[in-house]
Each structure stands twice: as C-alpha cells, then as structure tokens.
Length: 288
Image (cartoon, rainbow, N blue to C red):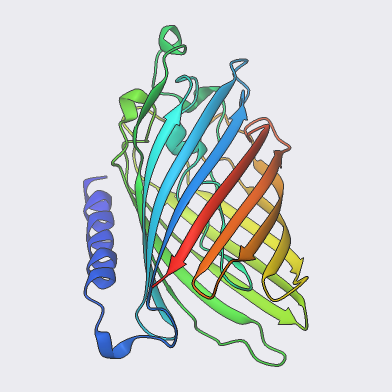
C-alpha cells in the first residue's frame, strides 16, 4: 500500500508540474487557458433511509499546452446536509458535471454510494459538514484528430488527492488514479461521444473502496451555433463494497454567450439504489 501511495503521489506531481510549466511557444490555437466555476446539487438516500443533500462547488482551471495536449486542475468546495454517505465517493473525481466543450462532453468521473459509504458513526448522521473536497488533476492527449470518418480519440489520466476531511465524510482519505478514453464524432449538426474508463482507488482508513469501471455516452443536436443540447447516460460499477452499480441520465444544455464565455446546465435522474435520486448543475466558463 505504501508503494502504491508513493506512485500516486509521483504521478500527481507530474501532472501538476506539467499544468504549471507549460511552454508559451507550444500553445494551441485559440484560448490557452480557461476557468470554470460550477454549482451542483444532488439529493438521495443512497439506500440508507436518510436523505442526504449535497452541494458541490468546483473551480476548474484548464491549460491547452498544444493543439492536442491539455491539463486541468479541479478544486471543489463541498457541503452536505448530513454524514450518512461520504461525499468524496458520492461526487468523486470531476463531480457530477461532465464539462461539455463546444461540441462535446469530456473529462468527467462518476462515483456513487450506499449506506456503507460513510466514515461517520450513525449517531452523527444528522450533522451537516462543509469544506474542501478532494482535488483532482487531469492530463489528456488527442491521439487521433477527428476526420471525415474517424472519431476524435482522446485518452486521459487523472489523480485524485485526499484533501477532503474523511472524518467529516468530505473525502475518502485516499489517493485515486485512473484513466479513460473518449471518442467524439460530429456529423453535420449531430454530435456524439462515448467514454470508457477505469479507476484504481487507494486504501482508505475508513471505507472499503473498490476499483471500478465507468461508461458514459451522450448525443446532441446543435440547434444553433450557440445553443447545444445533449442527452447523457452515465454509469459505473460499484465503487465501494455494499454499493450497487451507478446509473443516471441527464439532459444538458450549453449556451455560448460570447466567443469566450459559456453557460452550461443539466438536470439528472438516478435509477439505482446508490445513485442520487435527482440532481442539477450550472457552470460558467471563460476562455482567456
């Protein structure tokens, strides 16, 4: 376990160093830096019989190092109405918001929970908690650009740092690492994506975490050049012992306010015991 933790730290350090030490001459066309402020809400009992309401406020900074290589760092502030579930597992890497770029959804994680997801004792379930959540660093590379027939293929890696307080159910107390591959294709006004990934969760001192697979897919139709709706399916296997698989569907809408500013929102419905009953989100992004 010690060796695994060291590897996670090393990979995370490399990702962060890469995001900060981007050479100016290697910038992609268009904005090289973007920032996103999000607000996300989720509510459900996750099989515990106790409703937990969570608010997730992520600040995400993304850097385009080249036309193909990109990095991002997400720093979330988390609030939950009680400690019946662990928000670090419930929201996880990337939160509930799949960050939709101009044509597609990208770089999202999915986690979920059940009654065994909390490190808090049952007697403290009524206590609310808020504070810094688990920070996530990501690095992605466009391996195959989109062509007339071929979709764009973009693998990425991520590391989640245990910055959330696990004793207050704001984090897992463990490093996570993983990767995914995104496929995106646009045909006239129709655009679709598929993403499949795997997450290796670290050893938590309070939670029986499990490694898990994830699969996300979505399709949309550009009503105008600035109005982009999408229907998304998000799934994963159970991320913790005793949890069910996670399945939710959501309707998303992105509006390009200007060439640099965009607003994105979604409404979500969960379908399994360990998924949130429902959720919503809003994010504002600015390209520098």
